Image (cartoon, rainbow, N blue to C red; front, side):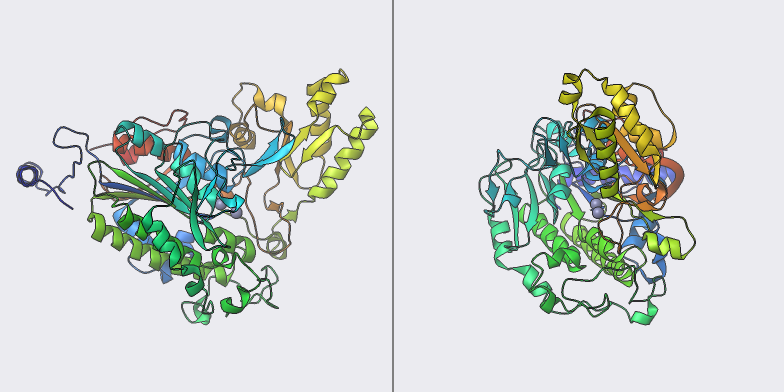
Length: 558
Ligand code: ZN
Ligand code: ZN
């Protein structure tokens, strides 16, 4: 961390003056823009933990160390009642919301994949057939942010410094890297598990930088999977979870029971993507993040840099084992230690107090419906196929056509608008008859038509979350939300997310480091408030679709 001597002296003088006037020594300010430039940290680090429920901060508290989550909460500022305010609460919309400061209605990322009316095919949020893979030949490299309709806070930092700031985004999942990086990232990297390469696309560059090539040559995944996954602490100490062998948990391919030790060296022979389903996917991501810090010299340039890290493995593990498993508890205990280690690496590389870090999640998760049912909590598995069949029959009977239904899943129903127009039917009327039918289906809480959601009218409750998740061009003819505890998931074990309820919307938001006073607020905060909060802290413009507001208890200077 180099600073000009004269600037240091001025800072020291400032400190002395401050201690005379307030009796408090102030932390020296780093000002990469020079003495007349804006007051900014050297580096901003965004950490998104995929599928981290807010209560995980406290559920495993007694087994956390002092340097990870507890350090964030001790030295940082925590928003205790932070929620997503749209549905569906999936990975792509979550990452987009965090970085764009707005919801799918504006940023266009309505799901991980959705039905595209024009091509009449499903589209994946970051797939892009116009770009080429870099670091792999597989289609897993044909990705870009082209479906993201607004700018991100990372884009705005680049604009603010005329592209002198570096923005690097990385995650095992492509969408966990690409959406945070926005349109103008220097690089987004994600992982091709079959080659064990961190890859990118020609959207960003034509060849991997040397530091990435060298990192890929180490074939780290192989060495991380050579041992068994044992619990970090003696297994009898995992008193916050159900028994290891529980009916709510899914098994690894090749296992006969979902129990420790998980013999990874064996399992990897039949599962080419195994690394992401273990806590060592986090280990791997942090290793690559540290390689990025060194390889790109982040936080050492003239301007503020931004490193966006998303940890994908907790989501895969949560999906497989559910929120009450020893596997999830163990994942968070390990993550806690590795987070501490990563923060220490930032302290060493950039200097304690010279970087700003925030940690949040892209959504939470619900308890397994069978677990809820066994504990007398109403819940159920939604029968998506049955809904599709019922709808098809209904439309055939009512309109004498078996081609009116184009696509259906548990939260979105797309109708054949061309046929509706050709038959001179009223779209609004067909939609509302579908709404009526779907509303009586087991597990459905609310169904609303696109015509209703598209009308500019502020709604309350679940309908308001549906409206903020509704994009006029991309969203369905009928949007559906399930009852609390209900789940649309393709197996009966493990869990998922996507709902409008607290278990999916409530996530941690903690800021720590440069310009942050320790503390907490119990005031309601929206996840879309993160980007505008960063905009104030960094003195840059808000992302261009921002509908969130800066979190006052963080940005207000006393
Ligand atoms: Zn996710
Ligand atoms: Zn997920």
